[in-house]
Length: 330
Image (cartoon, rainbow, N blue to C red):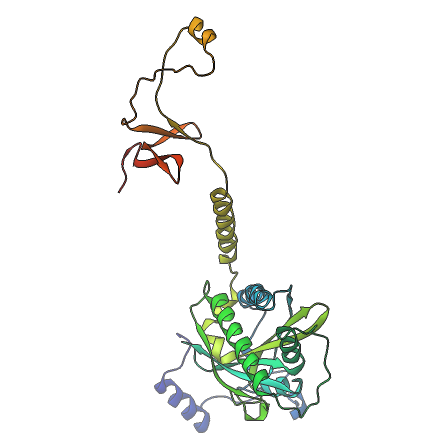
């Protein structure tokens, strides 16, 4: 900010130009230039502010694809493959002209970010999902551009859109807490005015494959909406490794909880001679050093962990845990 002129300096500069105190003769080598040598500069062009990729945003969309695959696979009860088809930066007008018809366009409110995003569900994907949900085989269906969606199809569309919002909200959570919800629905892009046609938008295409049938859905985010997070989105997202570590920890925990362990209750002890041991036969009684009312030590994999008492449960011998080895329970 030290190179910004003050108002007094600006007034002095303008006064020097108008009074001839400042030499306005072209510098050597610049004389003779024509209008064709001048390059036009559009201060409203947002592309000049956007440099390079947004690695963190790509990671968010990769995570979104995994979450949506799990959600659709559970709903349809069949395997669903979802991959990121591509992420592009273009003008909103160009994006609207390339949309498949018919499609449903869902306005996305991205609280607390300003502005709205757009979710596009093409008709081919909708009809495939409707067919599968009602017992069909999901084969591709020919659909005309001017076809309207029925009441049942609109209900399925609403469910899919809600699932997408839930998954998209969760995919953003490790980076920035936003809440995504549907703010409106249209079928004609001309009635969608999230930004001006010349404004830049980030578009991610998600390819959906179900039993060999392929379609796609798209999410459109205006650059003005994600601009406040551009520094975060341009940086390397290291939380993904933490997420993988957390998933690994959950897997290890689940495997440990499913493991079988040996539990022994030590009812008592007795000391006998070798001669007495050799004389033992079926039906003999060995006298232990504890009575049945005495607390029983309980061993887990040979380690003393609990205390208990002898009893029965549903006509079966049992031990009731009354305390920990290191102290009482509760």
